[in-house]
Amino acid sequence: MARVYISSVIDAPAAKVWARIRDFNGLPRWHPRIRDSRIENGEPADRVGCIRDFHLQNGDRIRERLLGLSDYDMFCTYSILESPMPLTDYVATIRLTPVTDGNRTFAEWWAEFDCAPERERDLAQSIGQGVFQAAFNSLKQLVR
Amino acid sequence: MIRVTRSAIIDAPIERVWAVLRDFNSHAAWHPIIAESGIENGEASDQVGCVRSFTLKDGNRLREQLLGLSDEDHLSTYCILEGTLPMRRYVATVQLKRVTDGNRTFWHWQSTFEAPRGREREFAELVGSGVYEAGFEALRAYLRQSRPANTPVPRPATRGGAIRGHAIVIDRHGGADELKWREIQVAPPGPGEVRLRQTAIGVNYIDVYVRSGLYPLLSPPGTPGMEAAGEVLDVGAGVTEIQSGDRVAYACPPVGAYAQYRTMKADQLVVLPDTIDDETAAALMLKGMSAGVLLQRVHRVQRGDAVLVHSAAGGAGSLLCQWAKHLGATVIGTVSSEEKARAARAAGCDHPIVTAAGDFVARVRDITGGRGADVIYDAVGKDTLAGSLEALALKGHLVSYGQSSGVPEPPGLAALSAKSATFSRPVLFHYTADPRDLREIAGNVFDMVARGALKVDVRQRYPLAEAARAHLDLEARRTIGASVLLP
Image (tube, rainbow over all chains, first blue to last red; front, side):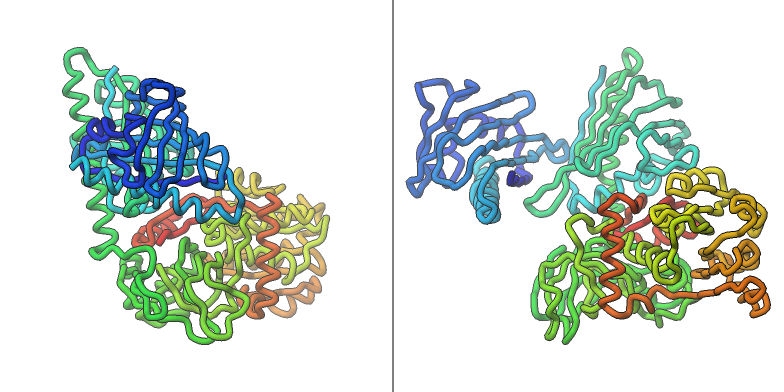
């Protein structure tokens, strides 16, 4: 089981950051690598169990299921159903915690998945830096 | 029920912040609200269940109990047992999280409690700003003071050229306040050398002797320290058995281990197996290899031998007891208190003898049916050596490997011949000078740890910059188990 953990500090109140992140269909509006997204079967994007079907800028298609969402603890957990990445059993969580000192946000994003041992380092790098950290960098700009 | 939550970002790596906060008695050193504090009953400050009893600067007194501590989750939970403030059912949790973006630390501090009706807001404010927010600011200042400006990046900026880092340097022999935190240049490795990024450094009593000048191993200015673990950054020409990226450890002269980076000879390094973490290696190399050499090379302890270990609860003594027990010996030990007798017994000592110096001969005779001990390991020296000779069996072996009470008179030939006794004064580094011997001796230690037969208890962790505090604690006998410095 491989694990990736990325955390950052975003210079905006947690409620403001959470408003962006809680929309399970909102990736294209804040993640630089996502081109489009839709929720299957016309379900609401905050219905636990719903599936988002989206494309990266390079055309790759990914389907993910919302496994958990909490406005109280400000976290969102989801799994990958379909993707071109050579991995299985991918479950990720993004979670926000207020930093009372300075009214900022501590943002964490982690994932666990299985893959061939020789792919682990590359996948962890591309998910950690290419997906999670890149998204945090973009959020830092957007919510300022 | 009142709930108070405060959180902050501390501009230091999580290891450094946690090294301070995991110590349940450290608040007196960094929090301005605390006048004085102590752990009750001489327990360790990271023992779950221990109680800190402290006085605030305003005169209020409190007793708080450590309910939970996790190095894995960087989590500490505690409650107020009693105090002069009218708060009830106070339970607090401190948790740290790593901010990977910038190698900083997120600190979350939360509590729930009850206060007298009508005064809830007052107490929420007292706890939230007076304790937690003031604590954030105070810890920041404390970390800045213990590591002056230009906090070095943990990764070197350059490869090939010199690396800038920090080390503890003494300009002259003397007290703990001579240990200064200084920027250093660490040269690239020459032929036969490697350059290390050190991750954990062992603290030994020999470091105190080196600092004070009792042992002539360091001509100031210089850096003390005999053992450490770390990662190989780069290797010099002709180094074939060690590669960049290897996890390694060492325990050897020359001194110089109290540093973030170090360039040194490759042939005194041992590659660490996955079963040994860096802190264990840093705490164990010197004392563990000493125990192995004393029990297997200086004297070959056999099943059924009666072995006497002086200072059986000390760092080296406790390892000797564990290992001798594993070899099937009957282990007798001298200790200075009932508490240490319990510690020695837990380490495998069959017969701890609580004694003032020298007063153990009759007990050893009793335990061995009048025969005496087959081998005696004596690092106390002046106070015990004469008694040790008396307590020795016919054809026994008396091994002197230190002198914490002062240098002893060596036994005369007549006294040795009266028992056909053997007397040795071994030095570890002579046994480990040949790299093949070193690897075998270290390998035996790692095997013993992997089998669970040898345990080292790292109880004190200090930021490297605070080496002086580590020395003061060691000299005041405030430590239990091993101490390490974290760069």
